[in-house]
Length: 255
Length: 339
Image (cartoon, rainbow over the protein chains, first blue to last red):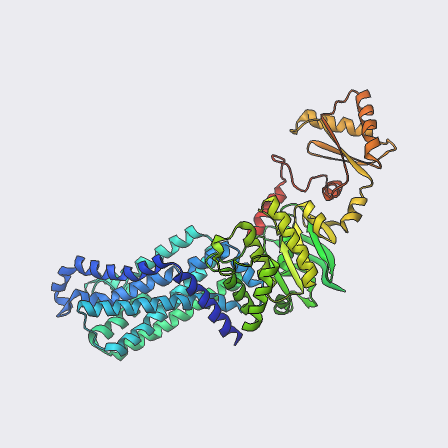
């Protein structure tokens, strides 16, 4: 019970400070729209590829943008932990009876709330731009479950890295090291059949790809339960791993 | 009754750095207890052990009746911690900061609302409750910081260097709040500082700590009295040179075993001479030195301060002067504190 109440107040605190930065909110919401517009323009000619069949590149790429937004949104979640450490807020909190896991969980949930809002917005804009969602609103909801699992693991990992690295510069470098390559090492931008052999193999070890495949299936094809099942299982394991890492780092480093 | 009891408490950091070295002390209920010592003496480490933020390497500490290692959760409920860094959230209002901590201490909404009102009054921040902390001045932030440690009416409040980085005027203000707090909330205060005036002004009892060990303890008056009478401070120069050292050596030998001198202690560029009566001793000292051909640049007579107490036991000033050499262990200690 105490845990729930602590998580609630931690989440609200984090959300409150996020929403007090209107510029940040505006850019966070606007960024995916730019990606959607820009990438579909750049890769317009890919629409003629036989591998895409009758699907437009926009239709193909929209799920990729949703996943990219999740990655960039949650990978930076550790920055605010770092700030709290630097300002002495963390150690002050640790001297209170507050339940320890709530400090990480609250932040991760707050990051999730932002991601869900962004994802819904991208879906709406994609539909306006002409994307047809094969599974409609239930598919969107299931997509949100998929990307939340991905984001959960990544946000927890980022918080764990913040506690491990303790400084901004290495954390920023670590996040950059992970975020963009994890997009390229998946089928987010290119149909899997067009990826070089080694990349096509490697993507099966990348949780991001499972989110892309899951969401893309829901958008383009419908309920392909075998794919969806795999995606959900892998991402569940991924988020559990991320949270375990975050919790371990918190226990050993938050002194 | 002792509300804090530390026995043979030690903390050794990686690299065999003994930040706290087998210290014993106790703090009585309702006392303002001061931990006075230079930077890197082990004050913050001690406070963090008492606050459950660090585990001691050995020894025990009982805080408010609970063992800090065995029942940290109970300790946390009984204490308020005001760290050296001002740990307030700039992107929230004063009220939001305080309320959040109220929830962490499991207070209900009604109690929180009432306490917030009382506490803002106590720390004189009425009218600023709903302003963003980013618009607060340094002194206001510190007051809010202290207030956040009070919301649950703790039995003990820990203040780690409460006035470090504040201008002298604000410092005096914060001292007033601390005194007011001790009186109106009946709380025990454990305070660390490297400002001797702060310990002198605020503390009922002081322990002087250096290099991880407690050197001496007592009321500020007791400690100062232990110096015996007055302090005559002599100085031949302002920068530490060979010549200066030579002067100090010669002066010391000339003045040794003069009956009116109780003791002597040299530090950097000064020689402190402890005497029963400063006013009559000063001209005496001058005469003796002149007859030996020793020239003094400056001479001052003062009542003993806690710095003199520190000096007497360690041969150093609490706050080393600019350019004074720092020993390697001190630097290592400081680094270890940040990890």
